[in-house]
Image (cartoon, rainbow, N blue to C red; front, side, top):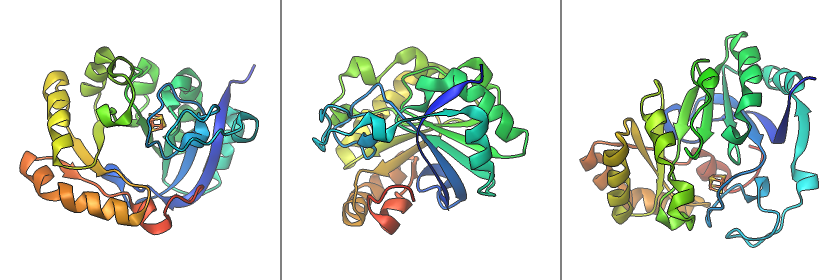
Length: 237
Ligand code: SF4
């Protein structure tokens, strides 16, 4: 039987709004479900069916989740005519065994793939060997998730030695950077990016201004949230 993915939305062409590929033209595959429940999550519609998240909204899984065959998803993504596919969520690695055949179909057509993950699932060796790049975003204490759920040492150590992985931390101010530094040191994380928290352009810009000098001083990269600056919290762009 053909494998299926639990999809929230597919959209493009758009731009990658964050991290090392910020500004690149791409298409997005957003998968449903997440094992965390961050209070400031900007995609609660992928997982929050009880209103437990910061928005307090109960989303309807019958409207938000769609069981889609892998081949059909690949065809829809290929039709955008972009060079880069971003697989996001929710937490896409909750479905990683079914992502392997999708990645094979897309890389066979020459596409680059980035997977955004919260870093709590170690990557399947087949996925790690497939040429995808992981953008790992471990969550800090301000997410409201218990530390045992948001920090999985074995998973972080395995990403730290996976070629092409970057680590991206959502921060509000310079105090959050001490927590990042502790994780960087404990787990040997390289290629560190700091991203300002915010769901409006004004919030993102304010946190960027508070963070910039301290991030540069620590030797890390700083990324904005370009999609938020352009379109606010509008979905599917
Ligand atoms: S890990 Fe990501 S998708 Fe999951 S709750 Fe946190 S911010 Fe939202």
